[in-house]
Length: 381
Ligand code: AOF
Ligand code: ZN
Image 1 (cartoon, protein in one colour):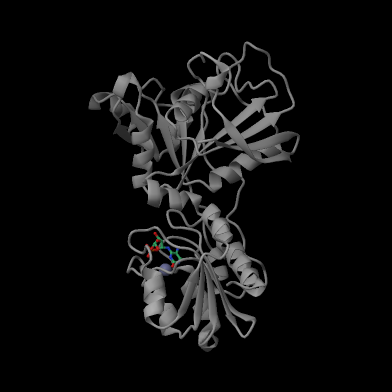
Image 2 (cartoon, rainbow, N blue to C red):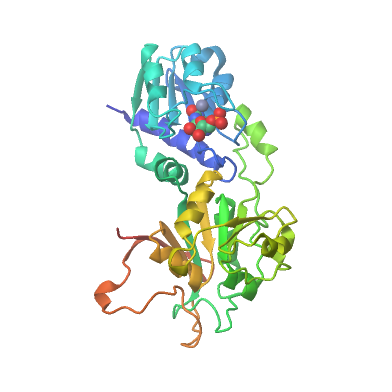
């Protein structure tokens, strides 16, 4: 039911959507292409929450040429009055003849109503073209909408022998500069970065995004989204620390930098005082069986609008994420170096009774990054 030409235009719309990779959060990444008699007459993508959606940008560029044309949109056009008016109405008003959508929008405010509204107005509205690509682009948004929690990526830097830190916990730097730059990109694509008390004490990290700019639109792009994009500041991911017993020093760099969400099981307010200030917040989470409830933390981050959570931590927190069944993807940078058996491994797990009990993952992507290898894996569920 979809032609080769349909695929071509939807790929372009997906490419435009991906320009929002570092800026749209908590909103999804969405692209739109309007085609009149085989010619692209309008392009748009969503740049940042609170600014126009993809469709109005493309419609503005197309003007009268939108009448009778086909719109390719990577996400079902919205039907609700949010920070902006419904895109489905804008497409109807502009007189589109056909609308092709990649994936429907699970947001309960939309959820099929966008498609229904287009059809009710007599527009030929179809969905499912390049759906897998569209879902992959918005895996975080889809996760938050359908599971109420972000997509959880655990990042590790390790030696060839699987060691992530010296026995005193220091882990800077096992991998090379190219891998570290790649981690900055991962951070820029994330809504929040979570670390643990061990890493805060051993490495004193800032977990900020440095040396990375928002993506830039192609120079020849005439969409009004391009002008908006060129003046977009870099979005700073939320930083969060799990410190169940408040064991970290409140004068570590991450707290002094400010804006941290500190999750703890300690409920006495007086003990929170040293951490508050610099815009930091303390959140008390339950500790069933004496262990901090990570599901409650990711659910809370979901409520904050977090689509993509990046966990950069040592074996304690990384092991806990794995045990809680929260891992969606593991990104592992492997350095061609050997550290030796006394160093620390990647995941703190209880001893296995048998190799049958090992945690199984599947390779998703493998590629060199500078002198290191980047391995991307997903759990086998
Ligand atoms: C679209 N096109 O480009 C985007 C959509 O607060 P608002 O008004 O920006 O609405 C955000 C919601 O709108 C978001 O949760 C998602 O369901 C939809 N995003 N929809 O038709 C777009 N970004
Ligand atoms: Zn919209």
